[in-house]
Structure formats: C-alpha cells, structure tokens
Image (cartoon, rainbow, N blue to C red):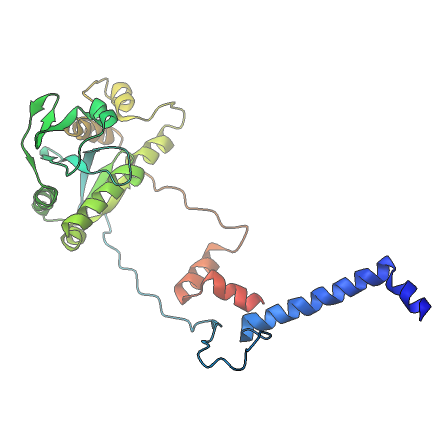
Length: 286
C-alpha cells in the first residue's frame, strides 16, 4: 500500500493520469458535438429540451451565373460623384453629379439634418432656415427621393445598362448611394438600369504605382495639365472623365484574396456553392 502511494506521487504517474483525463474529456466533447450533451443534471427528464446538434446539409445546386455583358459596347460608362453632410457612415447626400460623354447631370439635395462644419469647409455647402447654400449663395434643392428618381430617369435615357464609376467608390460613393436608394425605395428600378460600380482609385494605383498621390486633383494636374475647383462634384466628374479617357487601358479588377495556404480556390468555390459552412467543416473534422 505504501509503495502504491509512492508511485502515485511520482511525476511520471501524474503525467499519465492527466493524459488519460484529457483523453476522456476530448472524447466526451466529440460525442457532444455529434450527438448533443451527454452528461447534465436532469438531462433525461426535460420534456421541452430542443435538439442542439447541427447536421451537415445536403449539397445544393448553385444557380447559374448570367453574364451581364460580353463587351464594353453593351453598357455605358457613367462617371459620378457626390457630396455628403459628413464623413460618417450615416451621412446624407447633399449633391449628386454624373457625366457620360457630353451629357451631364447635377442635383442638390436638402438634407434632413445639418451639414457638419468640417464637411461644409470642404464642399462649401451649408443649410440655413430650411434652404441649401453653395458658397454662400442659395441653390435649388430637392428631397432625396426626388433627386434619386431624377438620376434614374437620366440613366434610363441611355437605353443600355450603366456602369457607375467613381474615384474611391468602394469606400465612399457606392455605400452612400446604395443607402440613399434603400431610403428612397428605388433599389428595384436601380437594378434594372445599373450593372454595378467601378472604383477608379485602385485602377490608377495599379496603372501608376510610382506616384505618391492618386487624388483627382493631382491626376488632372499631371495627366491633363489642368487645375479645377475640387469638391464641387460637378467639377469632379467633369475632370475625372477626361482623365479616364486619356488612359486607353482598361481599369483592372482589384486583386483577388489569396487563400492558397488553406485550400485551393476551386475547392473553396465548390464548398461554398454546395452550402457548406465553416461550422459544417468542423463537424466533419470532429
């Protein structure tokens, strides 16, 4: 008996005992993942207990991807820009302008809330006594839903789907414009007229990686030898359009994320199309 107690106090015995305990714990956890809770007070007496297990779903047939356009001749490139009441995510649009060729669109929008001092200092827009002012002068402004409808009507005249292009569209213009569409309940009409967005900022970064600045002002100055009144969106679209036309190369798509260290892109695509999620992969692993 004394010898057994001596053995139980050795480091080797304690290590083996801990390993056996960890092995039993892992086995119980694996069973709980597959079959639910195994040990719990009152486990067999709860009549309202719901199954907590999740099963790996059956594969689903992914929808066929419809190619919207086969060439640039089948859609119109529309350069657009907008000004907002602030840089916040919930900022309101207070000016929207666009251009395609010689055709231009411009509308001022009366925001429901005021314009922040920092934004007003840049875009020169302000609200006073229920009126919108640009550089201290009153301008004709309409409600958001009216402005969005006017813009969609303007796009409709092109008779072809439109690609909306903007400098920094991904992080700024696109999200605010889509938010305005939802507020105006115009998403259905928008989807019938617009293919999507194109961000010209990463395109110019790839075209001119050696440049320190890819702002519209500097691009216009260096490529067109031209200066203009920045932060008036009508002037912005009037200048970015010839900058784009001066470059005959097609703006490249942003590089796709590289997941090669985990699984191949082909396998990832098949797994996603079948309805599998990361949780289901964990279930299969356990």
